[in-house]
Length: 398
Image (tube, rainbow, N blue to C red; front, side, top):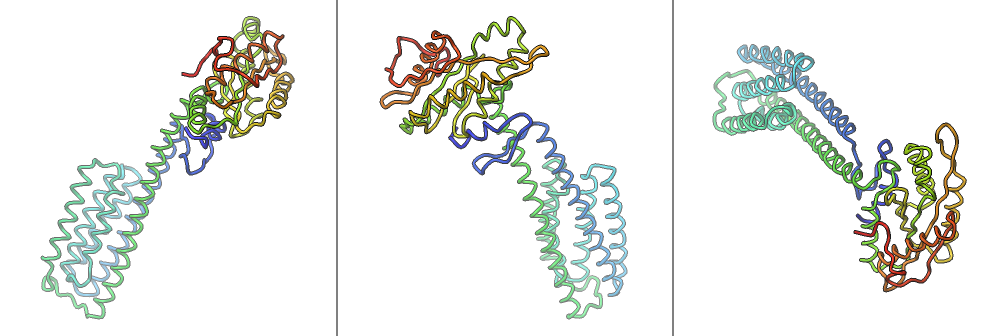
């Protein structure tokens, strides 16, 4: 986990998600993912209805063209197509869109073949098969892959066949060259428009699917790195951050270990609910007291670990003293009355030739000294060896 993840983890909570920089996708809970899936389905259904309406208008245009140019057989076929397409449009409000999609695909395929054969290939009706092939993947988004694959192959095969089978002699309508050119021009424009809209819709569907997939994965990652009670990160991001600092040979950081004073007495006297409220109130102060670049974690139980980045020696003790006083003066509800707790804080700064584990060990030793000195105080160790009095933290890095 790189340092850019820390602000996201600090800000992330079960009911508080925001758009993050491009380095990470937006975390999506299962409910949010389902909501996006419903939105995508609704948008796709709207496109399907729009495409069917476009097909109806195109079939009406073909009907008018057939009537005006003396092609009664084509006119009847177009009229049947209009009826089928209008029926398919109505079915989208009552049945799965797959049913309407199959009707639309087959109706359009039959109309394109009939028009291309009837008016000759010069009218370029066969080009509409490109848009129809793309529409298969939008109209039939709920259909099995095999169905989509078969229809796509049928459309592709029909396009190839039309290049060899079309004839000017089958219908012989009275289309002049000038009118044929106009029909071809409008047909090309409509085909290009249909293809572009279908491509746009497929891109939107792809983006939605990717966002849902990456968002749910990010949600799981954040859940694995976040303490559910306090919303702070757990030890995993701390370990990763310290590993990163060691890899970069950084020594401009400090580690603070905080522990609630007499926390067992609070649990014994008032119950675990009050204990949880005390931990949550301390966590809120800590989250508000440090910068986004700092890693504030609930290390376990009533113990917190903070990795403070880019801190000067002269600033460390004063900063932690302010935090201690803020916690001491923070009240939380417990058994119908306001209560407060105090914390002991131990800290140590990173030193050359010392590992993050050494620094954490020293901070834990400083916490031990703060407890021995009477609690509710800050102790900072500025000098320490690899092992301080033979002690190791309660929860060492693993």
